Image (cartoon, rainbow, N blue to C red; front, side, top):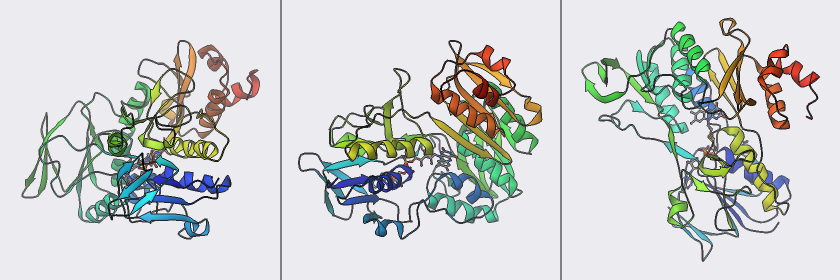
Amino acid sequence: MDDRVVILGAGHAGVQLAASLREAGHRGPLTLVSQESALPYQRPPLSKDLAGAGTEPLALRPSDFYAERDIVLASGGRAVSVDRDARTVGLSDGTVLAYDRLVFATGARNRPLPCEGGELPGVHPLRALEDALSLRRELDAARRVVVIGAGFIGLEFAAAARERGLEVTVLEYAERPLGRAASAPLSSWFLQAHRANGIDLRCNEGVRRIRRSEGGLEVDSDARSYRADLVVYGIGVQPNSELAEDAGLACENGILVDERLQTCDPRIFAIGDCANFPLATSPQRVRLESVQNANDQARTLAHTLTGTPQAYAELPWFWSIQGAHRLQIAGLSAPEDEPVLLGAPDSGKFSVALFREGLLVAVESVNKPADHIAARKLLASGAPVTAAMVQASASLKDLLRNAPIPV
Ligand SMILES: Cc1cc2nc3c(=O)[nH]c(=O)nc-3n(C[C@H](O)[C@H](O)[C@H](O)COP(=O)(O)OP(=O)(O)OC[C@H]3O[C@@H](n4cnc5c(N)ncnc54)[C@H](O)[C@@H]3O)c2cc1C
C-alpha cells in the first residue's frame, strides 16, 4: 500500500490504473508519466466525433482529478531508460524516478506507410490528439480524401469525412475490409453499407507511392491514380515495447506478461495495447487493442498491486461506430470460425454468431445492442452454446433467459 508506483503512459490503461489504485486504498507515491502534453484524453472519438462533427477532445478524467488524489501527472516527459538494478526510470528531461513497482502502459503507435511519399505533408496517421487536430484543420479546406487501410480506424474516419460532405476513396490491399478482426459476412455488409453511403471503397488495391501534384496529392495504387487533398492511413499498429526490451524484459509482439500481467521481472508489469498476455480460456497468447482490455487489465492489476493478486480473465469486447452504424463485438473470433447469421442483414440490424468446434466463441452485432449485451453474458458464463441452441431461440436474449445457463 505504501510502494512507489510509476506508470509509463497516461492513456486509457495508465489513467485507469492510477484511479483504481487510489480506489483500492493505495497510499504510496503514484506517478503517471505521459509523453503527451495534453490532459489525458479518450482516443475513440478521434476517428469518429472529432473527425466528423467538430467536438472537443474528451478528457479521461477532469483536470483536478489527479491533484485531488495525489497522483503526479508528469506530462510532456518521455521515459527513455529503465535501470532494473537501481529501480529507476530516466525521463527525457533528465528527471530520474525511483520505483518499487513499475508499470508499462505505453500503448502502441501507427505502423508507418511502407511506400514512397508516406511522409509528405498532407499524409496523416491517426493515433494521437495532435494527429486528429491537424487533420481537422486540413479537412476544413479539403474536398477529396483518400484513406489507406479499411480497418476500424480507416473506415470510421472515412465515414466521418463523408458526413462532412467530402469525396472519400478507401484503398485496401486485402480482399475485404475489416479482414483482420471481423467475419466475412460482416465485412461484406460493411463494404456495401459504405459504398451505399457514397464512399468509393476498393479492395485488392495496395498503394505503391504518393506524389505531390499540382492540385495536391496523387496516390498511385496497383490499379490507378487517385487525386487527394488529404491522405489518412490506418494500416495497423506496433506496440511501444522498445524501452522494455532495452531493459532486458522478454518481448514478442508486445511485452510478455503472465496471467497476473507481470513481466519476467516481478517488480514490473504491463497492461493495455503494449501487453502480450495469455488468454484465460485457451492456450493462446494475444495482444489486444481495445478500451475494454486497457481498462479491465488496469482494474485487475490494481488488485494485485494492493495485495489481492488476481489473474486477468475478462471477456474481450469491442465497439466501432462507422457513420450511422454501431458495431459491437463480444469474444474473439478467428478467420476459420463458422458464421451463423442472426436476423436479416438487409434490415440493417443483425448479428453474426461465430462457432469453433461447434461452440459459440464470438458474436458481432450491427445496430443490435441487445444481442451484444446478451452475447457478453452468454460468453462470460463459459457455458457451452451450440449453433442449434442459438437457432432454436428467438434471440440471444431469449436464449439467455430460457436456457439453463449459469450467469
Ligand atoms: C483513432 C482511434 C480510435 C479508436 N477507437 C476505438 C473504439 O472505438 N473502441 C475501442 O475499444 N478501442 C478503440 N481504439 C483503441 C483504443 O483507443 C486503445 O486500445 C487504447 O487507447 C489502449 O490504451 P493504452 O493505455 O494501452 O494505450 P494508449 O491509449 O495508446 O496510451 C499509451 C500512452 O503512452 C504514451 N507513451 C508511449 N511511450 C511512452 C514513453 N516512453 N514515455 C511516456 N509515455 C509514453 C503514449 O504517447 C500514449 O499517450 C481506438 C484507437 C484509436 C487510435
